[in-house]
Image 1: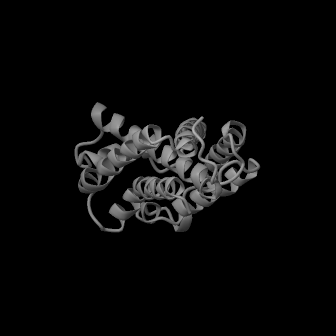
Image 2: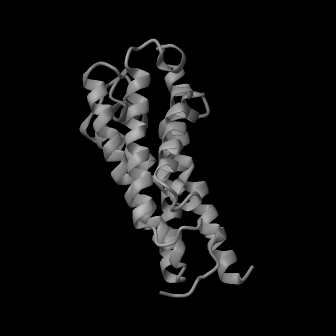
Length: 222
């Protein structure tokens, strides 16, 4: 393994590790491993800073595959989250969700559970929600890469299942996997189906190389 390939592999693993932090904060907080304000300050913010540093290093050190995949993964994750959010909002307004999740997240992050949402908490809640979508997009793009679009659907449905089995859903008092709230499971799976379809399609369309990142050894400067 040459030095450039080894360095890019290490940086890629750092991105994957940092991207995995954000989606696990709410489950960790719900399981009693710390409050959201604490986890946001000491885990989420540092993970974002580290990812930005790695992104800059990938550009400066001409790690073109990593740089390109971070751009595509982040962009595709953001767009796919918009698709998910459209479905989630419809489900929420039809009463198929126990609450407006991003606003709840904002209340938890700002420690305003007893006070209710504010403009700042709503902004932070939606920012965190979309950042999770970006992180899932980065993870998929770096590990899976340019595969048929249904890989994205499988990936997203696994995420949706993980959410339904997670401590936050268990703590809402709506039954196993949300079965106590009519429409909950359907909304979650349809929303994640939209996310996965967009993710898989755009990754396949926008990525330059079909191989997964760690299998690419051609690191010529382009």
